[in-house]
Amino acid sequence: MKTYALPLLAAAFLFSSSSAEPASEAAAAPAPAAAPAAAPAAAPAAAPAAASEPPALPEGMRVLLGKRAGQIVTVSVVRPRQLVTVSVVRPRHLVTIVQGDKRVLGSNEASLAVDPAQPITWETTDRSTLETLRGEAVISLQGDGRPMSATLHPKALLAAVAEEAEGRHVCKAFEGTSAGFSVVCRVESLTVAAARTFGDAPLDRIQNVAVGEQTFFRMELDPGADGVDATVLGYSANARGHVVRAEASRLPGEARPSLALLSESRMQPVPIPRHFPHRRPHHPRIEPFD
Image (spheres, rainbow, N blue to C red):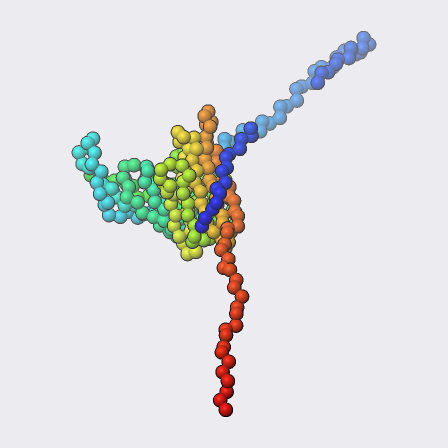
């Protein structure tokens, strides 16, 4: 797909008194003061709002520990720690596992070689609604440091901070595991690609997986020290090209970055073969023999 112009989008900023009457001189002696009215019963104090409880672990979701994937040799410990392959399974969902700079995306399940002593974050995204659940995985270690078991702890059902749907794509953006945003898109097309518009690695922190005739993308945006980060996703539907642009930006002095998630489409030039009129073939006339 060729797109002749990418939309350059930027986030927009928005930018009573009372009077007393004199008492009459002929007034009778004042009546004894009435007993004060009973104070109304105090309403029970409202209980402080309880912190939202983490969601329960979805049915059918599980975690598996695989074989050792290698060693982490460190100077501060006598015995090197072992990398362990952890797998998170949830049918009909996209599964993401993140540890540090390492991340993996899969459909129905995902596996990643992790350090059991470091935090492990996972996310599952419903393929039909893009609803995303985030949690952490904890690996229990034996006395000698070997992994014994793993447990999944759901933390929060993420709220979308931006949504975009047009043509054959649906995208939702969520707050990322670190500073920035995670954008998840579903595109009903196999002729689709995505890339970063800044930096030397166009596919850095962009992952995709195909499920049937749908392609799912997950793009991580972090303005960082540059103050801006953006990705572009493009696909074609019939003779129309679509571009989805996600841009995270943060101006100096802003506490949090802002996100713009927009799309644009236009008709693509399609070569039309030239029409040549059909000419009747020439058949030589043959005279009959007498």
